[in-house]
Length: 403
Image 1 (cartoon, rainbow, N blue to C red):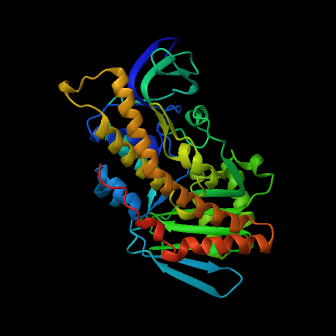
Image 2: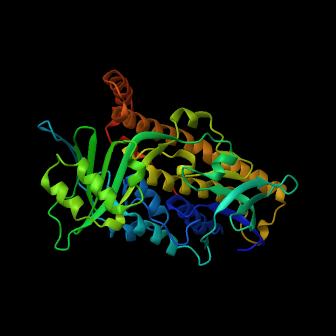
């Protein structure tokens, strides 16, 4: 970019699921925006994402539901099994419309529906300031360029620079690591359309078919400190995972042995503490956050991606109700700032309770797993039971409404 200066109305920092969905939701309402993505290409780290009915409602609003449903089979039930106990718990998820989508399918579909030139790749923001005279947001890139924006939306993940400039507390890390990967079966796999969760001693294996030939799996465990030596090397991740699963059934070990090494990732689980969300300052003037930048949570409910899609719909709806459209829409900057502030306040008010509830339920679930003593486990479990009164999948009933 060099040392030039650019001006834009709406800038979205981060081209992941939430950033692209927000840009597309605004585009569907006739509002242009620019997405700044630090990677040189679309990124789809994390292999796959579970999407329940609340996420599909948001994708339907974006006009992508039909196309994306074709890329993943509906899963009919969740089967919880315990390795050392003869115990099986079955939860039907037919109504909840659970499917496992490849992240790359979701990201590419979002991106291709945006107008060309909507995404600036290789654009890493290193600092954000506010111009006291013009009230514009001033973004500085790592290669010396300056970008000025009337509206700034941070969809830049758990380590969000926009969240930092809003003064949000840094997310915390659970002592749990997760390995994720794909295994492809050229002649088709023999697994039913079930989401399997198999629990061993301090280890959880999850397996979800994406389609007739591809299976997504993850392995969560209380994380030992040597994880960091392994994280960047796929073959070491595989070795580490096979060692972790040595007591698991042969079909599980075969699945990991024959996985696509390039799909492997090993990450720690970040979360924003639910009590920080109660009073957190999620907007200021014409700046706000969405997705993980707002409410990063553990993957225990399978709602991280879908809640970001919900954010996108609600934010675009609130902004479009306040932003003037067409030639008669020219208004003074001060009036525009007032309206956008009102829209952001409305967006945050609408989302706060929803993301607090998801974050609290996810935090409690993670805490039950990570707790060092039985007493703590039982305390977390007792509180969690209150959240589950409506059933284990009641959090999927949410409807983000129409664009």
